[in-house]
Amino acid sequence: MTEPVQETIACNSMSTHQRNMLVLFNNPEFSDTTFIIQDSKLYAWSGLVSVASPLLGAIISEHFTNCHDREITLRNIKYEESFTALLKHIYGLDIELNHMDVSVICEMVSLSETYKLTNINKDLKDYLSKMKSFSIDTAVILLNTASKYDIRDLYKQLIVFAHQNAEQLVKDDSFHNLHYNVLLELIKSDLFCCEEIDILKAVLTWHTDMDNERKNMEKKLEKKDVDEDVIQDQDLTTDPSLEKKDVEKDVIQDQ
Image (cartoon, rainbow, N blue to C red):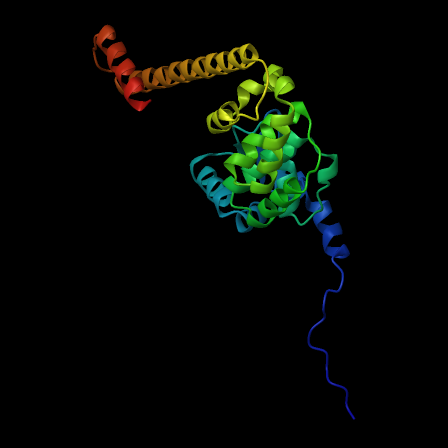
């Protein structure tokens, strides 16, 4: 009896594939795109990145269409390590979360949400949800992340931790970074117990920092509007005082 011809060869192991991807990962020789994060450069293959994240693909496509280089600066990313880890995921490589700083993991949650990397976004949220111990210096960023991205189990545990460590938390430098809704929930709770003067000082510091941040943003917007007006009206004669008033009015309306 003639044995049937095997028409398909199954890949029973991913080791060969992963070895190949490990060679390709962040290798300028096999990449056509350079991402610039802070002062670091990360090399990637645009096709693979675009398939994994259509949003990143759109950013790449727009840059290639309008610019003469293939270096894309991604702003508002604090940790180069967080984007590197997401690229590893895109390349099918393992990520060791146990050796990562909590702040990096939280930024990975944010970036994976932004770039619609659904699978790793879920894995990251599951990982954070299983955390059993917390520290004062990471409580705030975890509270903000859990609140913003609806990681409910983590948020419940952190609220309990915050109640139990209220005295230390309000005196920590990270307290002023709390999101407004989280801050409000904590200070309105009867379980958030510490000296009233300490809570008052912490809230005043929080408000001052937020106000300074708002003012800095207004200045940036004002400068941006002024620069745009100079470019658009460089051949026109205008009254500088009127121009300044218009810019200030626009900034206020935008806020």
